[in-house]
Length: 289
Ligand SMILES: [Zn+2]
Image (cartoon, rainbow, N blue to C red):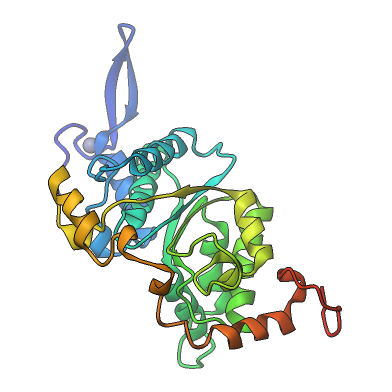
């Protein structure tokens, strides 16, 4: 390790407070702590550049989302509610979640963990395979116990009873332990007949739990991947008018095509398995809840 010129590798330095010399941890010690906490947080390389300072704010909702992210870092770890960023692809939800997490690590020494939801489910599922050494609980423990968890892209996972149970375990545990959770999702808060809605994808019980544990922040704005970096207001106006991804160019017909045909079948399954999760007028036959 290269030597530190400030502390000569003692990790302590002298600071003068009110004319009195004292010892304090050296900058190199803080930097190493940050790097080791950051490494354990598992931020994917493609988000390594994301900071609160370089989050692009073109519209009011992006400014508001950024303000909320900064406020969470400032209050951390005494935070009443986490954050749930929802909105279309490319508006900066993951950037903001990663940025606030890094800032909480840097400024507050937060023990934080980032997981893309589908990746988490895959890693847990892989532990059932006898060739992997990690156990289910070894994977889940840091997720359940992190002071700050970012669960990225919730709602794109393929639904199954196991997926419901696993996500329910993560969300319910963090809820009852009052741990800070930040979620990003493309889901919309529409009726439970919409396959892209919270109610359809996650069930009404999980939706209401998420409402209790997170401030919901809707982020709108141009798709940064569509538009490129540092767009001018003219670029944004043109994007709004011309891009097929612009909200004004998408009708109800523009729902994600992946779920269209299967929507009714899915909904039937949900009704059978958890009637209480839906506003279901029928009887309680076969229901555990
Ligand atoms: Zn040093």
